[in-house]
Length: 425
Image 1 (cartoon, rainbow, N blue to C red):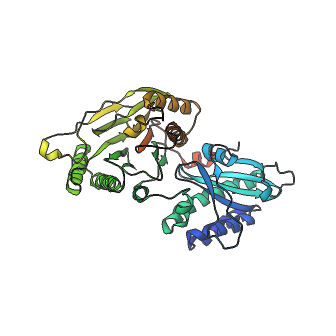
Image 2: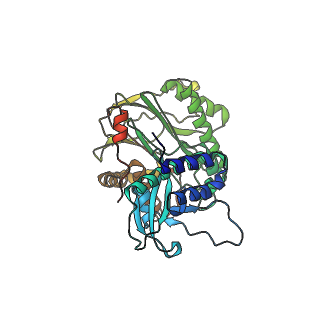
Image 3: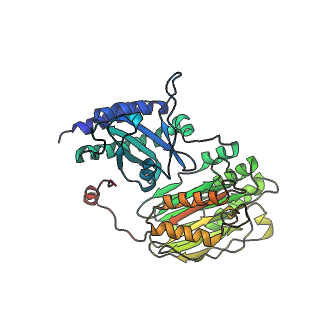
């Protein structure tokens, strides 16, 4: 077996990126993309609110041309590639010269990072890459996504490129705490959105996918601002500590309650803690004064799942004798459960109209009927929530959508080799 030229180029890119800083990544990627026969390879990173795609060129050199404007996700071909995770082609812009621009989604697992654009020197500006080049470009995009996800841990340039405005200190704490907001596997899909992204404070989410079980928590700390963010941070880290110690839902609830009571005086957080048996579809949960999750089946709202009106964490569980009952529901294949904070349903328009369950359910049903991914569905619901309040949220609003696909057969190596590359549209 011999290495093809495409494999050698991608191996060389991987080797060159191994010892580079995050700011050096764009130049290294552009250099190796040219070896594949394309030019102007550019990373476009999604911003925190998933409204725009910002070109990431690395360090800015004084006296050079100004950075291109971010691309709107809802009105550009780059945004379509991002929304639907498909490869799209279009005539190049005047700034790029003649040729065809190929837009490739950048996904690290199910987490959408942005898009990669490359230019083909096509005289007509409307052609598509030949099948061999198309395959190598998609492999290039897959490698670029992994490199961006890896390198952002070692510097601030990638993190800063994802911000369209300044992040306040409370939100900085929260974004440093959060896991990736999107995950997908044969056993479960998870997609979350937090607003206002640049000012979020008391809301937070966390999850862990392990053998035959998914554990998740949604938290809503009292108030808004720095103390609220610190409260949410303690709640999430207490949750992780108890979860990783193998404690049950009730034991975990007691541990979080105790930690908040010890760490904060006269403060509390509502929360819902849940566990899904991925081999059985049994969902179990505990509510600490939190809004009820919503069960969706075949794209329609079935009902709100029952929650016991338990005390929020931090109000002295050991002193009251209060215990959090565990409730459960047998899910059906394809069921979705939406966990949310009260800032979603209570969001008011300037005229005083609540966002409400009915509006939320209609949006979700419409998105599911359009065959959108959980991540894109959550993005669009988040956009609708902002528009409802004319981008002036008075409370943090957080949603986490979990989907159980049901029992899926394990993929064999032959199955993997037979999988098609993402299609072009």
